[in-house]
Length: 458
Image 1: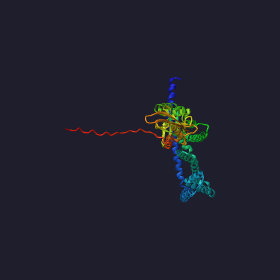
Image 2: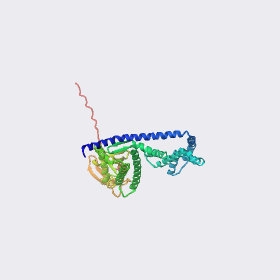
Image 3: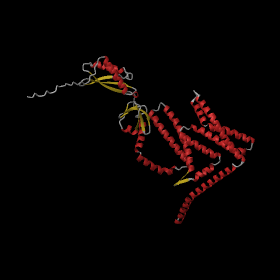
């Protein structure tokens, strides 16, 4: 191909690119003019007698609905307050009916009106009322169906989108609306993004994400009820399942509306590099969380101590671990600290925990008797295990006492450690008081010397 032909092709491509916005603008103008013409014909049609009669009938039904709602609404509410023992699902249905009572009454009034007018007069004389009745019924059905969506924001989006769509469908304006949305487009290289594509994408992705959320919730319940899967593995499976379902919903939704994801590869790569440098700590915590779940070093319900924090693990998150202490405080410890720091897991391999108590007695007390009394006192406490009997040993001869260590086992560290130590100390105190065993303590004597007498003067 010679240079002249190549130049001609480039000029043709440029001309086509310049003509595309002009064509889109001309299409938008045509659609707008068509809608304006339809609206003008509608206003002109209202001047006809039977069209005006239908508008008056519709306004009268609205007024009747308002009056009936003011009368029946409070009575229905008072009747609902008297109901006791009803299942929750029935009460929810009654609440929904009470909130949509005006729309229910309007649909219940307008449809018999349409049927009666079709029987006594020509169908064209009830055409507008039939359209209004279809809109009322469609809006009512959508309002009931969207109550199945748990998320309030998503429920509102789906509800209003559904109302707009059925309104355009009943008024036969879907083609004009689609053409108008398609005319508003922006080109990103080979990718053309229009408002119609955005609306389709939001609708499809919203439905798929709602389905993915439902599947994730059902699968999560089944995983958590499976006793053969460890708690840490349950958390890992739930996180992986949620990530896979939501990612698949987003990918399939964008592909379904014709979005070419290969064109976003470079942009996503650049964003990924930026996030890698700017969110190193976040990524580190995410990776540490996955490692914790895989190696099963800690799991929900374990009792751990990290530095001055002692408590049991309430939940394992993607970024942090929730640790609840005995005083009700909830610490959110980053996953990275659990990987790089020294963590004491009191219930890692089993729930048995050995505790030590140090005390001393006077030198005139029999050490053999002290050991027997200390062991018996420890066994008198409820949480101390008998199958792992306590032991007591002499560990040194101090300045004012014989020093002992009492070691005992418990199997419920989640019940606390300080309280069990306190109970054993109290049992030792009572036992020593009963057997007249003294616990020495350092004593100091202070001798007050007389002041120096003044020297005798001559």
